[in-house]
Image 1 (cartoon, rainbow, N blue to C red):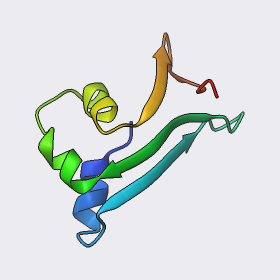
Image 2: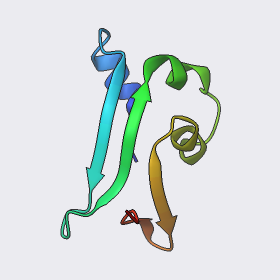
Image 3: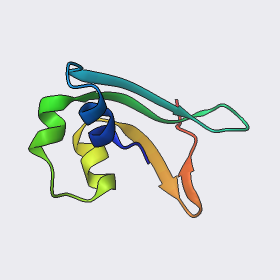
Length: 71
């Protein structure tokens, strides 16, 4: 999963992250969206999947992990 907290802590001047995660073989997008620092800090105690959804990141999961996004 994307560790936006680690990225925000490494880059304290960054206010938003445009994120696209691609499948290593097919290069299909499996997670995408924009995470804003303020939104990330507002949801600290939720599970990682719920935090990603609340941040507005789009992803599909199923058996075996993340799946390609339906465009």
